[in-house]
Length: 449
Ligand code: RAT
Ligand code: ZN
Image (cartoon, rainbow, N blue to C red; front, side):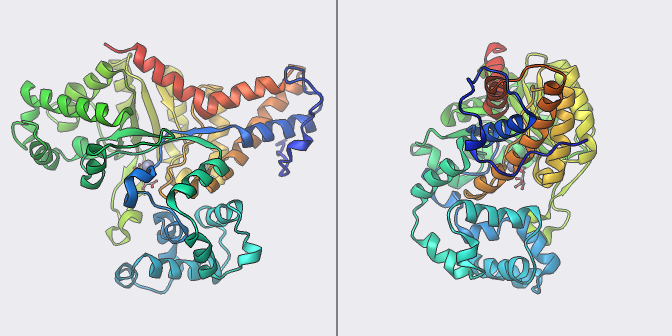
């Protein structure tokens, strides 16, 4: 029988008289304690598309940005009246008006993405029962905020201690910020994103040349020349150093094969990316299973999920046992296989419920069997936020599901007379919400060579 965590997170229900290392006596108290600790423990968010205020226009925040988030624009086109061209011809405020009417006023916002907006505005103190369905009222409340103050407010409300950005060295706007001082807010950490390098060598080579790296030519055969690979390694080393990257990352289609002799991706991984990860002691993060632009008219929302051949990961783990791989995959069909693969390779650490899997039912399913197969040796969630305030709702929804799953696991131990204390639970949750990631980082440092 499934045991559900109570919805009341009132910390007053936690028995304050009991010592933190004393066994918890009843299931009711166990449920409250797990929930309280999961809701209160600060989290290290290992993959987002957020930026510190240093990046100005790249930092997206506010009610209009929440409404034009690509997860919601995809839903708009299922219910709204405008054609793609009409919608995209509008500015963000016009699009937000349409999304608000179609998804929040004309019907109830029950999807994960839409209900998330309500959670964010509510938890940030703008009660929907006061502001109602008047979008301009929310806009007026947001107009009083500054980006810097909002970053503080959101991080405190969401209880997020560190946010890892996605930093693309081929993005000219971002590059300019890094070249004139970079990120000055230690709560934001960097990750070097190299999709373009791995998946589109022809245009990456041109960019590398314009950035002063002497890569031989744009033809993939140039990658069989050691001099070109050496320049790619210099580029990766320079940028990892400049931004203080915690890891190197890429998001890959599901049909990527590795190794494929003569192909750019294989030559780049073997000849540049893995050597630089090893040299600098950094993990490689791979997000596998996206099929880009299935419907280009949806723009950023036009990508699809795709089942992947996880042999790519198996062969990387086998070939490079000292390389720490952080992995998430997009197809639900690949999830169980990935968890089994992680049992075979301790250098593979699973993270998060990504994108279309970042929904209540998928998080519950995935967190359950990942815990059953891997115990506490994986990272249950990352937010993938693109808009600052989403940290509030994405973590709120995830924490609530995670606490329910963990309560079930602890309850079984408790019923079998395995004593469970508040300290035990706290240690596990801290491990999930940051400790596992830190362990991967330090293992990568140790594997340096
Ligand atoms: O979740 C998303 O917002 C996607 O659009 C992708 O950015 C994905 O998370 C990725 O990092 O490739
Ligand atoms: Zn992402």
